[in-house]
Image (cartoon, rainbow, N blue to C red):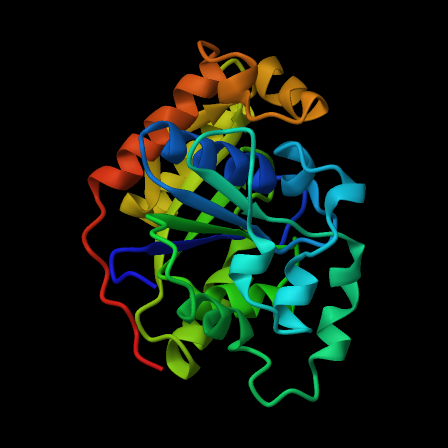
Length: 264
């Protein structure tokens, strides 16, 4: 893999925070900007695959085959309908991976191993993690340069974040010392709602510069796009949701430097 490829895990063990929506639309916005991008669907629900138009019956090879069968990623990754955007799809087979991999001595390094062996020219590899801190998520954190954390603007939003931060710290200490927090992005934000503003203030006071300036608003176009199996950038390019994801990617890429690729 190229030393210039940046790997970003998108993780939050709490469901319903806009994690997969963020993964799909950040990937689409990166591709739109001209970056060759791969989205690895590591969630057994396979929502990122559906959201990019890969029907369940078309997923003959998935991330299950990548991790459990150790098939080459180049045989599994496939183009989408969007220029420069590929996906490694997932389905429910992945739900048994945790149990099947327990006896494998390199069980936490399998995704890292799979990504080492590709010469793809990808500028970005995004990993959509499952909504739990299981072995699949640990694989993503071990393989990644950084973690992007979607945080829904709702009550108790910050409470679940502490366990993810502890997990990131443990991964740094044991398997991936260069792992960092890419940033925290507030999602489903309603500026008319006092609670959203309170959560934002709390997040910025607690996490400081880790919180992106860009906020993803609660937007009907963002909610509608998955039912048409497209990113919101393709569904309604001029919507507030599309503009927000473009702004987030601009903010992310402005801070990026050529990463130091880890040795085995």
